[in-house]
Amino acid sequence: MPRRKPHRKGGRAAPTEHDGTLFGSAVMRTEIGPAGDEDERYAVRPIPGSRATKPYRCPGCDQEIMSGVAHVVVWPVDRIGGPDDRRHWHTGCWSGRGTRKLTRRWS
Image (cartoon, rainbow, N blue to C red; front, side, top):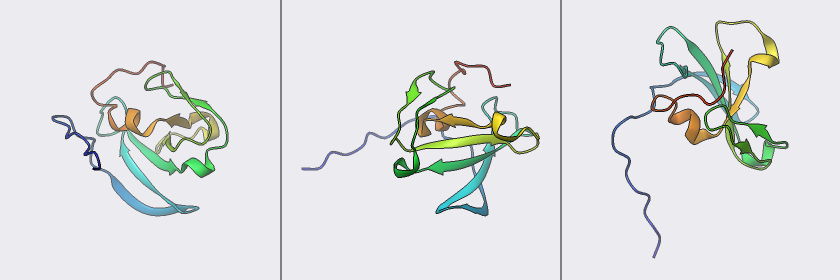
């Protein structure tokens, strides 16, 4: 018999906007950042496990995202900084960013 996922109560992720920008087979979307400020928008691009070729450190939980694990890449929309502003997050850590504090400083 298949197991059912437990239902989560309370805090849902912030609503997302799909702007239709394609990166490979993934669609980029914009979301509210980790601080929850409505004016601070971030581009979010999902990375499938098959495209995750090296490990990264998640700023949400300070744990390593192993190669081969699906996750999201996030960067500020309004700031120009290039690849140095991108952060790789576990998908669950990014989704729960409004209910927990960052373990690493987002600069």
